[in-house]
Image (cartoon, rainbow, N blue to C red; front, side, top):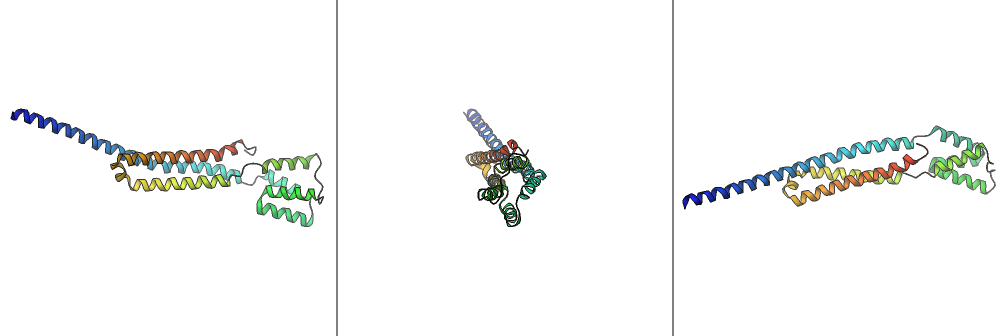
Amino acid sequence: MQWRTGLELDGSTGRAGRRAAVAVGSHLSMEYAVLYTFSTIPQTLGAAFAVLAAFVIYRFQDDPAVTSAIDELLQMFTGPDQSRLSQALRDDGLKRLLAEMDQLFDTNKATQPTPGHQHNVLTWLRVIADQPDIRGPLKRAFIWTAAVIVVSVIALCFEKPLAACTACAVAALCLGVAGLARCMWLYWKLIEPLIASRRW
């Protein structure tokens, strides 16, 4: 009887030990998952945003051909009209400049260029002006990137408590991956029209 009892105790102790070992292994695996995921997300977003910044910087660089074309069109106007157009360009950009030009054409303060070189230049500038404004999407991408990076750093600070609760860790990992995917989608929606742009 004692021998059987001893075997049963040894068996139950062995099973308990195996369960404890599995639990410890599972906890360590979850801890590593939280650590690696939330340390990788900021690095990935940092690298991706650097590439995005390169595209944006290139996009906003002054294009010598555009500058030359604008100067050529401004020569069609004189005095106060030319000053007004230059001010519109400085304050609100190319689209506002073209709108002011159209106003002057409509009020017969200037003669609209006939088909030829200047007409082609004006048409080309209208195409440039109609390209999508990326300032709004860029701002959203920056806000999302900053938010996901901050949340990832906070999650790293609570790595061990998160790993102790499997459900909490899984939820945090899912949110982290979802935030990363959202940022990547915003980056693509920002770059896509620039790739299709004629200025590339």
